[in-house]
Image 1 (tube, one colour):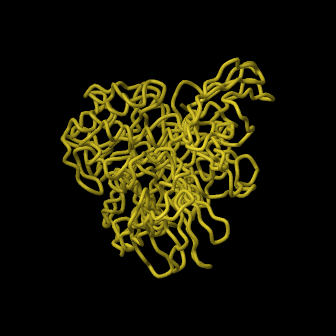
Image 2 (cartoon, helix red, strand yellow):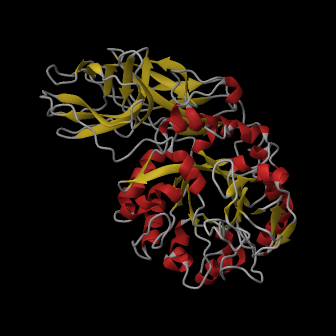
Length: 606
């Protein structure tokens, strides 16, 4: 388990914004009512990190903000966070997101970006006026309207109504957005949408436009299910069948949300964990804004078969997940925060669980994508124990965090957590109050894989996901059965435990014997990282030659690998059923074959 997300972390590091870099700020600027100041936070030759800070230097609250600037030709923004950044040629515009538009007198907000090229911004404007405060940015964009309410829902129509937005110059009209796409512009605070499909889920938001043609932020979202059309397709059985989708998979792996459709996997699962959001400064934060909500997918990459446009309200993986849910309305999507790389941030989160929960709620329920997510998953590796870093928050910290999340997200959202599978005496399961926290969670994803691997470079070789113990196992308690027994013994209900399956293998090289327990000289070569390889590759490059403790192993030349196959998954699902477990989950979709044979093995046997 120690290196569960090492491959993911290594790849994502190349893609995520640099943090903690020190740069030279531009000089402080005098201000009248508001200022926008640029700072270059880092520079790596071909690109740089930048940050804008908007400060309210006046006496009245600013309800929204827009920063505009020009870059010289050849300099551009490549990714951004905490603002929606667009461009027209070399002219760039950044608008606040739903949660950071309001700035009280004396307060400030910042947003950042990564850029390519070497130029600096010029001709800056804040809400249409000078960024240095020498003129008053008095014509602010309108506020967000109230979240719409739905009534008179029929097979093909719904009536929407909302409370008015405010603006210093007056409201001109409202845009009504269905599933993020504008369907109408009206001058009143109500609208009846028609021509809908019976028995279908829709999500509506509204945004205001003032008499100066400035558009404000979107409102909260209301979900509507039209009547008729039969019933919503039922889940595939009463067991949870959950897969992780990684935000970075769209890069080197070229694995998009659409692949869940083409592989047939979308029809065989009940839930998706989207990994990962960051945990930093005691708050939930965006992981990779470009992948999450900015990347434009072409028609052949898109679930809907329609290419993204530059001006649509939401792009990226979030929009693709929205399209997936439209096709498969039974699928629930959770946003997973933490993981191996970002679990160090939970120590600060544990100091103020209520504030952390509020930040997570604000992000997950951001009006731009609130309809995409059905809850939150916490992947803390590991509370009151060591992973990439060591946590000393205490045994109660995890319970306190999950309690705060449940209180904030309420009963209509899912709250789940990934947990250790260390069933050894005095191990990680005993380090935190998982039993006390169980009352607040819908289920635990027990990471019953990565027990053994080539981080022990010389071996002994051992299956990384043993179901049960066997003679010669390197460490007692490092099995699925031991982990589940330990959780149940401390008081976690079996129905709240999901068995974990890795869609990859772990391997060594320099191995001479077939059976487990051999010596090695180091990790076997892998496509993305030494010592790890996808199942879709191993099934052909190193077919299984035997089984041990309910999982497969293979000896090919000097390499030795262990991994799960459809046959071993079938036996593990049968075991999970006898134990009364709540279902199964897997890490992660892209390791499966193009026709989803591992997902099928889980779905058809659970």
